[in-house]
Length: 321
Image (cartoon, rainbow, N blue to C red; front, side):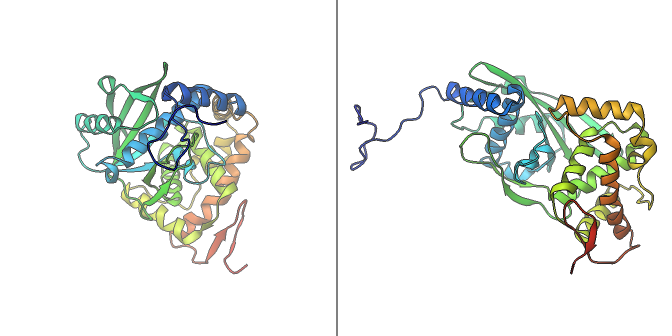
């Protein structure tokens, strides 16, 4: 249909589509339609999108080199094919680790202009110090946001003092809606695996981090790895966190743990809560993780020097095969 109103002052352009007058309402409607089409919870999608747009603002801010992306949002850099729903954002921070300073930096990032309709309530940001163990500390921040009346609070966990081996990559994240994607520094997948393994070792029988089992299982099912690169990351992470690297599988990967009824109940609750009720039993997932990780642990300890590759779904095999 011909344009009935001049939409552009550029000569030779007969009609330029205007953006919707209410960007927030338009984006909320699109997210709602997307949630219905996917059968996913709207609040989960809204939380993911708010985090996406926070990361977009981070990339456009003067603090872009002060944070490295980690956690579930990394799936968006790896294709998003096995995305784990989350309203949480995990970052490695550099610079001043004090709570007030971090809140000020996050508020400044939230204030970066972006044409997405999201309003961050920077005056209502809350934060507290967290400490997982003696060698790892950070700050947990809660950031309220709204989109055309739909409200969500996202949680941002910022850790300090960690080592990243291999070095961080710059990645472009896939997005829910067709807007410019965030381009941020991110953990390489080997460093993510090393940290999750170290957490399993430290937590022992008290481990309730079911998301780590899901993530490690998904990596083993979908990604290719070089054992030496993975082993270097494991070695560096355990050394930095002063954690002994044993030849024995961590408690969380033993059959005693995997068959424990309380742990199986936690696993089932996690799968239902995140919209993945058809996942395999915990013992199946844990044994596959054990098959994936323990040869890399042997390599990290110097007990094996073969050049092996992991082609999903495994097992490890010689690189020339």
